[in-house]
Length: 401
Image 1 (spheres, rainbow, N blue to C red):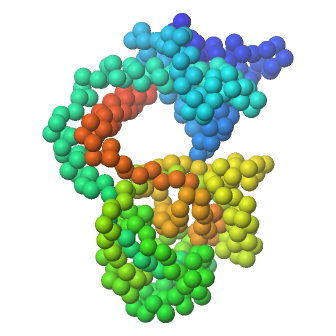
Image 2 (cartoon, rainbow, N blue to C red):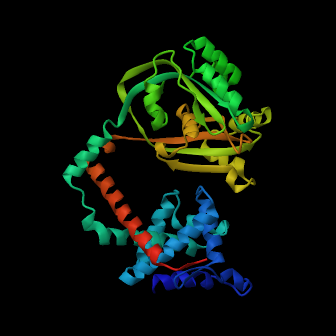
Image 3 (cartoon, one colour):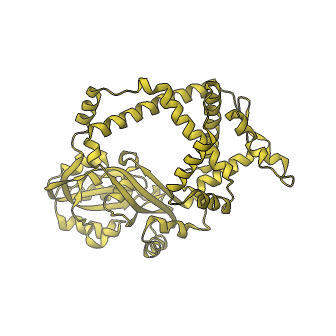
């Protein structure tokens, strides 16, 4: 059966006489292929179960449109996934959640997601991946020179520098911004640790204020890439110029810098969660953050705390360090897995962000392994070919609405 025909008929095949017909009528068309309200709601619910960040309604819409474009291309090329291969791929997908296929399908069903919804998602993803490898594989070969160049550009995959810093974040929502910036500018002129620590106790919004803003020794690579040169270049006693962040301003003072004999691998990805709390940096907001911290030990615990609350209260994602907003990255820099901080806000200071570090993925030996680098580069090149092809398909398509 053609993939486009299968996808167009999927929702109708699941219909029962008691379900309103408009639920299975087209709400989006991609060329001649329909996407129904039922499919959209199913995909959105599945994404919710997968703890996918972002606007799930929009993510579901974009995924289904792209799948229709991919399915049409696969049909034109006569590419399909045999049923037995689909069963194997679904089993592998379930295994990532430490379940067998039946357990995983039961979990989906208990949360209102049909088996066919998962199978559609897996089938298109796997078939498209294999098609891209087949079509562009010969053009994605990586030369030895490219591997050596990538190894040279990567430089050291370990960090042998640690910094001993003190920190201040002064809340600066719009009504307080001028005053906060004036205070930060004054503090930035000091070279006295006692003056900086007194300012931290008086003005800082961070939990470290109780210790005068003092942090323990931390790898320089824990900090945002854009600030590593600045922080690593501070002389003892020197304070950074005020660093603007959303609804705040940050300052750091160096208390020392050292090289360590056994370099640490640098982070390549950060898994973190953000829980939004009302009240901002008021006693009510801070008390709520402290209470949440007292009853949560891991990022997984936050899902229970978010139960029954609006969907956008909790967000969790795993991204490259350079992709993390600077104020969030500064919060994460001082944390170990399972630790949290609440020094930044959003919505003009009205929402306090409880930021918890879930895990750091570190660059291990593979980062300097030529074979691993070759495979990474090949994967990146294939992904670029896939993105370009999908962009062409989308440009040529008629998508309504």
